[in-house]
Amino acid sequence: MTAVSLTLEQLRADVADILGEEPEEIPLDENLVDYGLDSVRLMSLTAAWRRAHGIEVAFADLAEKPALDAWAPLLGVTG
Image (cartoon, rainbow, N blue to C red; front, side):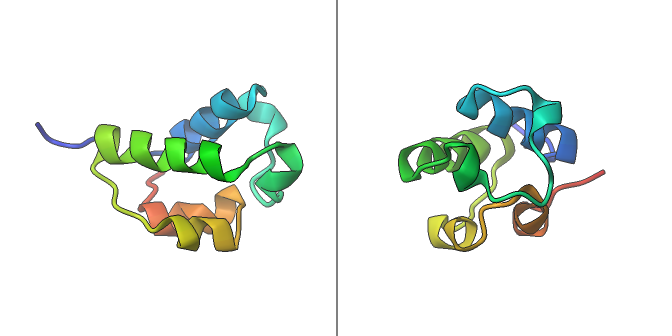
């Protein structure tokens, strides 16, 4: 099975879903902790991206700057 690239739209949708928000409500540069992101949710996201997209990323790298615009290059986000 070939992994499908993670897009910025899907990244935002995944984060919004786990936080119970609408995707358009999540700014790209906002600290996601302010929206309720915690370590358990972050671990769930990394596991989902690993399964769906084959992405291996360190939890600590994402936790260091919890914002979509900081995560995009770490996750190899396309378009």
